[in-house]
Image (cartoon, rainbow, N blue to C red; front, side, top):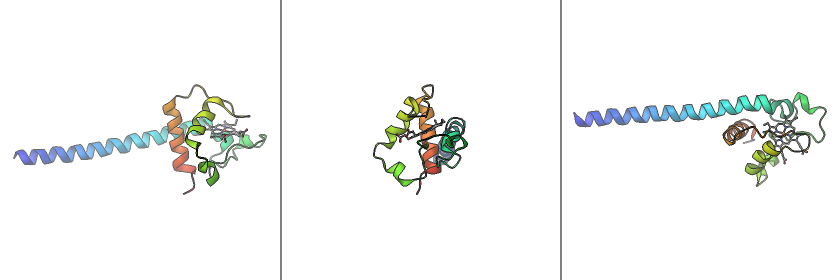
Length: 116
Ligand code: HEC
């Protein structure tokens, strides 16, 4: 009897724990997507190729996240948050974004645009 109870609890924890993790990850990605669409899409584009509607008038053009070379930069994990916070050229800074917002945007960029 005791053993059955332990098993039931173990399975229950496994299932709810897994569900919770999946949900947290999905939520993070959804948040990153929403922030990207709100703050970055205009210039960097829906496909992340730097060809958003607002990019037409820009020179130099917004970064293209679908290129391997963008991700090959060894400092890319620092560069993205720094660029978001400080801006670069015609890209305006977004100092109001929290670190967790920025991490969500990076997660979205990595899962959606980074070439395999
Ligand atoms: C007003 C248009 C615009 C918006 C909005 C914008 N960017 Fe940019 N972004 C640019 C331009 C233009 C460049 C290229 C700047 C340069 O090289 O002078 C750039 C460059 C970058 C780079 C490359 C920096 C480097 O050093 O190579 C990253 C990373 C980046 N943007 C991320 C983002 C993210 C994330 C968002 C949303 C939070 C965003 N940008 C919103 C226009 C924009």
